[in-house]
Amino acid sequence: MPGARDGQRASGTRGIPEATVARLPLYLRALVGLADRGIRTCSSEELASAAGVNSSKLRKDLSYLGSYGTRGVGYDVEYLRYQIAREIGVTGDLPLVIVGIGNLGQALATYAGFSSRGFRIVALIDADTDRVGDLVGGLPVSPLEELEAIVQHQQVAIGVIATPAAAAQEVCDRLVDAGVTSILNFAPAVLAVPDGVDVRKVDLSIELQILAYHEQRKALAGHGEHAAPERPAVGS
Image (tube, rainbow, N blue to C red; front, side, top):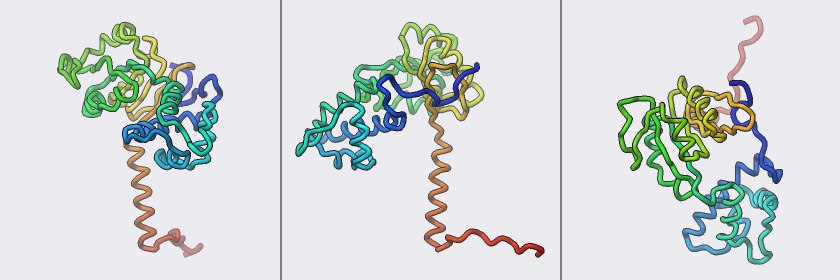
């Protein structure tokens, strides 16, 4: 299927930079944590620290939402939480479907964090007929043949792909053909999608390899091995 590759779509109609959009969920998570602790107002420094960014970047990001806080008081936690949730589009329960109920798919299906962050799993789908009918997280596993009907009946907003790499593109195509325009891809494959479809890729092996790189650098620094390996002399 020709078209854009993973993550190439621009940000929304308000012209918010894509980098800012990527940080909004971090701020929302931090605000949820502050609210859970009974904190009603917070400074930009406190919120930035909780989100893991610097305060000037946070203030600039929030300015795109028209939120500047109150001098000497800071931000109203509940109101800012609502503002960001509304901007992201998670003030209600967005219906999502998970395709591929292996070990990873099962873990996603039973993750309680979806419901508390504005998402509702409406269906679980797998191509393995032996899995069909199994209850996972309180939902029965449906056969792949019912994918299109489920997407349309449940008005699915987001498709989550947790299949093996070889099946990912076919599942993606079927989701798109059924009307899904947002896909979260956990399969180790790059998906081709048409314009107007957003794909976010989560590759756990790549993230682990990045961490392995940093572990290696820390180990080398601890042994004082900063210098690059010596090259053999020319002509030796």
